[in-house]
Image 1 (tube, one colour):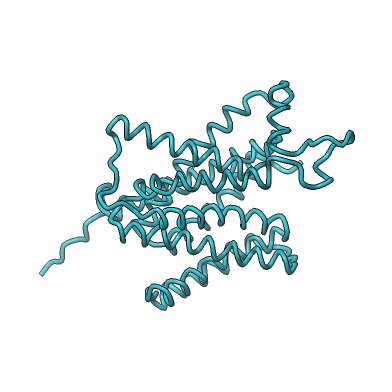
Image 2: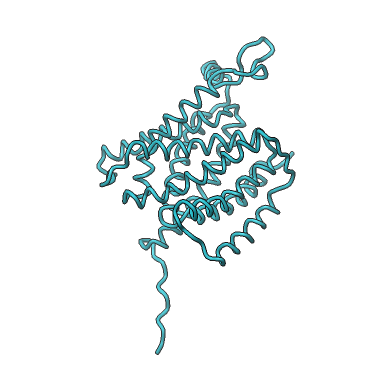
Length: 300
């Protein structure tokens, strides 16, 4: 008896949708890293404030879709406590990763990113009784070893940096796990979850921006005259005086579009697959970011 060939995944099938989410996530993530680098090079090196703009743009975008009847609210509303929990984990992931990078070497930062996969496996197993086959574990081991050899060079470890690195790994793993579990728990799509948590993400990032980036808190942030020169308020004053590069506002707006697309693909990919698949796709992004950095920002 002849066996029929397995059906190819179509765009509307779960596998087809996951494929497009993965492609969109890789392309948009690589693009936003490169565009963010242009924003930071222009003098706006305030990641929490930039994240605040991104989340505000997301809130406004979905409100407009709702007003135009182009977006449907989830049938089972997500409790406010869960919204805040998921949102705070996402913002904490961004914050702890940035602090870890500032306190440790780039090599150790790459190590923390690599450890997210095994930590996610452990949390899934002990908290959600989700196990993984030995073949998948072996494949992940080979993948992580290859990415580690390619990206990890010097590993300079400090006690405080290690603490923030651990917090970064835990918050990132929990955020990605919750992206998948909350979609299934409340029967919502990735875009509906993104809409549900975006307000609290904007609120959390706003608080961090005001606390960390809006004012000069260290002597090295002052100029020769003792005035604050390295804060969002100082940058705003320089922008009003016309002392910042032309087009910076348009570039920041472009990062808002890209951030919306990144989150849309990320929520959708994790909802269709798993946090582990998302991490594997993430390491493909790392390779493309390295290549893109050499192409668009060649060393002098």
